[in-house]
Length: 299
Image 1 (cartoon, rainbow, N blue to C red):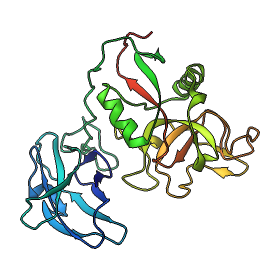
Image 2 (image 1 turned 90 degrees about the vertical axis):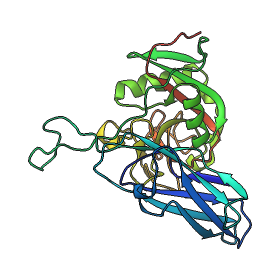
Image 3 (image 1 turned 60 degrees about the vertical axis):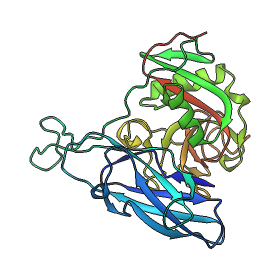
């Protein structure tokens, strides 16, 4: 039984859905929300307690909307617990913690856009983590004050994101064409083509980066900074067969292609060429790239 929020980092005022899977079909579940600094006033919709019916496939979805309040309270966090009984004594599952960013923190003068210079709320990025392993990193390189590490283990996007945080980094965020070129060449040099193929990505090989549109379809944003990719840099694939992202059969996570796709096509003759980005299904078990915000020892 799994309790999986649509994201683990969310701004005040944003929607959040939590997927429940593996539960008894047709049963009624009871949930409650609890955590650091969280109360019912923090939810515009959904509430801190409730019940939900499981469908015939053993699946249900809990929907919330965070309140966009004006108070400066700092970031908050919460988890969702699911019970089989109304008195909430028999715990069936619990989500990992979700961080709610305090958007009441104001930008500097002139931060507004078309509003007479009024300041604009600025999302608080995830704090720079401290690497958990002091040993030299393998399959790693440095660029522009950052360290990158290719993890040559096949994981789905969410598992890769969590592992990156555990290691003290985050799934890589690409901000420029030069960074993309260096990352692409380095991945190839470190054996990236050993990664499993993504069948929904034209049978080609990819490495996970840190953006998705899980929160809002078609609105890709970096999971660490929360910046929309169109506000920084984007490098989607395109060719004679079409262009990315195309959300083919529900594709929600961004990966960098290591070869042209579909597999075997000539440059420009498919949906994208090696070094470009594609949206693929989050369930793909492929290699992933971790970025650290400082220079670390590498082997």
